[in-house]
Image (cartoon, rainbow, N blue to C red; front, side, top):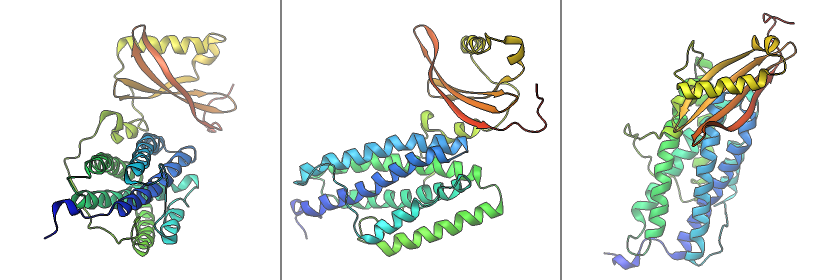
Length: 308
């Protein structure tokens, strides 16, 4: 019987695993950040943007743990060239119409594998002298479960045809083959897959259903009266130069709640182009104020739309 203090991993091996995890997470973080501008679907764009931050925290946690394992801080290391090849393939889909492939690679292949790897490491990490590693892994496991659940929700929303479902399956099989050939991100072989859980809590700020609702037209929006007044004032400021001419072009097209903040999407129909503006409103001591304003899309007008 192995003595409790003997542990399962040497210090050097533990440090190598931290570097391997950090390599996969860092590359995934960079991929998601780059894909945001390439992804036309708002629900997927918001999903990617939300999870970039979490992945950055994971990479930072692994990097900070390394000096405690007698290794250089914030170093990433692929386990092998085959791991590099897998990550290269995961990053391949860059066309606007390849959102499904992008999400499949991250949320059906990489993240489930990371979740299983973290869990396998957690159950084997020595509880006496590795509590810092165990705490990092517990946090990453919680985040990955939440990410996978949100990703599946968006994929279910996007894969609305048999052709898209087949594309998703084919891409998943290709990446899984590459991951298996690499022996996982650590090169030590694939850990046992974890069973699916139906009790995964979904934070309000990471609710993929809210992202989908932003893409769903509705006739009315449950907007608080104070915020409705603030939105009206905001619209008035945009229309101040030519109110009568512009009023028929500006309309509210989406509204969603994200935590204590609200996402509001406006659409301005002009004679030469249509502009979609996404704003994030936050309450404060002086009432509702714009916390973020971004042009989400610019496109040529539909032939059926009126022109001036």
